[in-house]
Image (cartoon, rainbow over all chains, first blue to last red):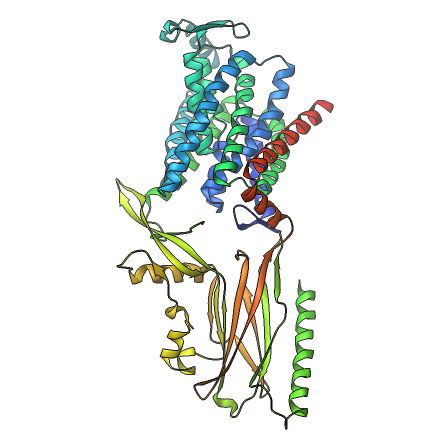
Length: 306
Length: 256
């Protein structure tokens, strides 16, 4: 079953793409991650042009984040005020990211930058999760909880000006750190086609000291609007959003996420985290190999659009 | 698929027979040296596109069959491409500055009944850009390296966009020929020029030029046009689709 993608301008196997959407959906259902940081590299490996993969994946994340946020919203686990401050940063970051993207595209280095960003990010996140996973399996659970409790004390973040009360999170905090986090996530979203939850969630927990139960809902709320904006900006500036590809991935993702949520309840959390770490490192290694290994074609030939 | 191509072949066969008939009956009258028929002057690319074949058939007025040759050249619209060389910097492979090459055909095929070098003189091939090695590109750099030229041809050949097939033209009987030119799946839109050369004893007797129009149809074409002509609206629609998809999934999981 082949289908021609009008924007990516390649013919792809519908079953394979649907399966990829499903597989990443399973993972996001199991681990509670968005999956963008796995989907974009997979699309690139499959032969979708990186710039199309990034823009289209942003579009898919909009859908998966919306379906995710509703559950948190029903449980009242979203801090809308904090989410909006993060979003302001996200909007600034998206515009910056798109500008940077256009600049790199013009000098012909965008594919390289996308790969480098992925190697860097997947490498660090993957090793963190991996190490944490091993430690969790070795140690018993109880002393780990004690460790988290101890981290409650306030840090330099609380000495900054422009403090605002965030009732839901129970914080009285400067808006500078959340805006900065938002900007960083916005840049990531526009260059890498990720939601950025894997950066935002740890930052919210360890830097802002937000209560863990509202962190995911709040980050999803921000991700919805940032990825929506990034999708529109990519469509407008680069014409690289492939709606056909996005729809295939969305439908695969929906099915996968249901299976993933089901499987997730059946496996132990530490084992899951360990698996996720291994997976991320594998994708990272593949990307790195493609950067370092002698390329098959020494010349890169692309059409010039007039 | 098979059914369709079977019907196609049948029609071609019937028309060929028809051709031969007219040729035999009107043998005394003055006739053209070359008559060409394209199976379908409009090629459509749908969303489930595998690649199409363009059937070309016709008749030629041969003196000595063993010295008659047919070359078919199909050339798509010209385009500009950017070529960047990969160089190793700090251990990773980085793109260098680009060279712009103009006048590169978006599709180029040579079909003939035998090696074109043996059919006619090199000068003629060069002048008419018949054969991959005689394609002329235009570069913005003075010192256009032959390796870039070779690389472009190699890449396009691998993708099936450049084809050279010395056994592609079948001569049937003593004055009929047919060829099935392969148009790959990822082909560009536009007007393609089809030229058929008829040689007798290494000399050009007649040539015939016609055009084939390649269009992208259905969703594929519509989406492409919208994305390029109304990019803002297109982007908003993409996001709206995602919102609807996300909300309906959320609604479904609530219903359970």
